[in-house]
Figure 1 (cartoon, rainbow over the protein chains, first blue to last red):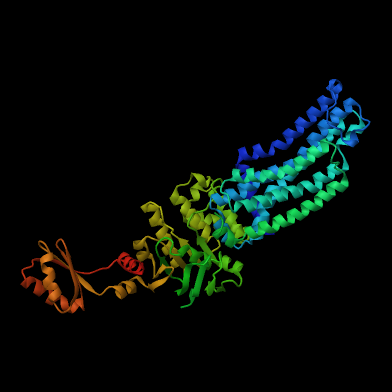
Figure 2 (figure 1 turned 180 degrees about the vertical axis):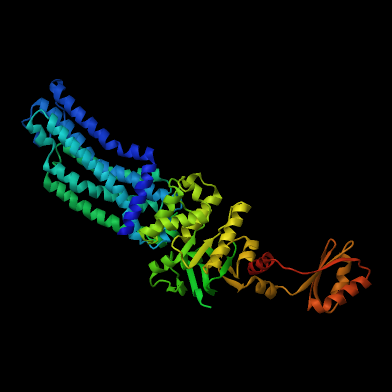
Length: 259
Length: 308
């Protein structure tokens, strides 16, 4: 475990020296949060002139005024983005940490040290996951604060900041991030360009987008049972992904089969 | 003397293709062993097996007292390896690169900085210690990679092409450093294509092409492949003297190139006066008579060429 922390420390040191990558990646959650809160605030002021969408509204919108519905729709849409960020950010960081290291041929000297491969893998995964989850959860907290501060009524607050969403942010997003990083590890055995790995891993956003559109269409209600159910499924997928990533991330495999 | 590296029938296959075939060798502690062979001969695979990076398909080995496959973590702690590519983190400074590896090699906190400083000084990189490695020349990168392999003071060091692509001055610094390592009692396993370098540095040499073709000291290899001989330089064309030379019963081979007659013969020290008399009697005007010296390159080409 000690060596995993040494790897993590080195990864963060390198990350700090890649200012452009660091800023481009980590600035996204605060930007989205600022945009979400600002839009939420503005819609709360002007939505009296907005007409209702043609699509059926989610059941929890029943009984809301037009002003409340306007804010609730904006809040719901932005809230789902916090489920996408933990896929995007660790994928970018992990692809540079693993595919980048493969491309620079720096892995072999590391593998020649007494480090165990699981320590190396864990260090790299944590180095990508911790900042991503930290900044996502911090941004989500700011978003919640913005919603609580600027919602036109308590009913809007209750519709946007639901227990299901909070559970999803706290339970499902770390698992999504973990799956994203595991996918990058698996892709590392095949690709030599971090951008290619990121592009392929972007496929993970499809189920989250499905959740977003399902919610907006009123087909899916993200309550605690669904959030936990998704969590169970994601945990199973994450376990399988980690198992597969650990199989790919072995000295022998890296040195003889990674191309 | 104890053996730092011993292998018995070490074999590695990749998807049925034989990369290393039954390698058996013993390398004495505190010596430099040169591992020579053409590209694709299996040298890097051998080094990777001995450094416990990949497992052999068959056979066994003991490296620095550790049996391969038993406690590979302990084995890795006892060896240092300079890989084919320096594999350094370009954005990190020389010091940050070395600190990272010193910690991975389990050096305690108090020793990390002391060892990093020691090797940065030894390899003349101290003045550039805080600059990003990406700004370093090839020679400096190679020296830093060598430092990395030695931070934990391993008794056995694998150096894969340590002077490849270095300018003559940097290559000389590295060669002197390797000599210094031997003087400290370390065992060096050196793979190189630079045959004069191997001749200069190595106590013993293995010529390898998937399997070990020959092993011995440079002198033993030369003596084992080529007989003793004499080179005679004459005034004018030496070709006319070849039939006469070949007619002498103690001459095994004779050939001429320009004014030089090269002969392999039995016991040159006894036979040279007779040879000189015969040549002079045939009208040859002799400038020099020298001992025939075969280079390691001759040995290598004969063995590897013969194997092909």
